[in-house]
Image (cartoon, rainbow, N blue to C red; front, side, top):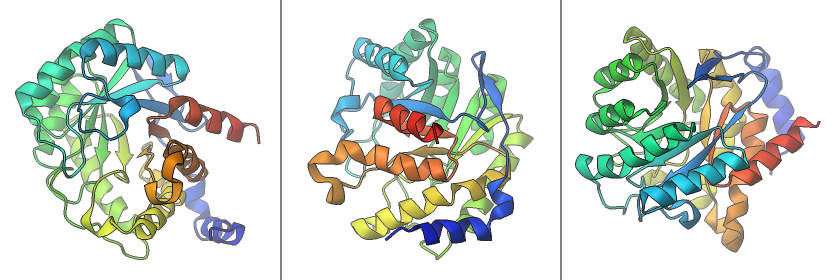
Length: 295
């Protein structure tokens, strides 16, 4: 059982990290003050394989309309993707991804909505940035040098996701050591250095808690791992860049109330000083963050 004793011990062991500040920057002319105000990223899935039915939009018009609703509900950024990260989901070729993504990106930019595109494809990255995407949500490790150069050339931002493999669809096992933070810190430090060397200035880091890993199928093991990372997030902020978290789900515990899972995890993520919350449940997460802010 998570307790105040656990939280107190975590803080006592990492007091220096608890005061770490991260870089703040603007996206599309909008300034983000991460050190004082976390941001919310709403999710729109263009793949029919995505399980979160409320976020699935199978046409550009419906995706744009859904995005406008999420923005009105409090999302400062909309993250769109054309291929599900689920293990059983169909692979989507570059041409098909681009045909789905480009009209949505252009429509959202015309509506002055900040757009993030989730992909591990170099070709999809190039097309998305040329169409006006503000952020690349990078879910792979192959071709990083070329991808980072593209991001820099378009003065965009990148979310560097931790991926234990070539990409989110080809991952191995997650290292379930007692303290995963040093391993994550080492991975992100390497990727941040590579990104900066290739001109990227606007960087987020994401531990990838929503990704499919074979050795995280036991629900108790997976949820304990997720909770541990959320509460230790502030230690990753010592790298100097804001931390993004995709809020996960615990079907086995929440059952029919699964839409309440993201708000629950948002509390833990907020306690760990998360800077950007990626969520399907924008109004619920906004309510959680607004409530926590009153304390």
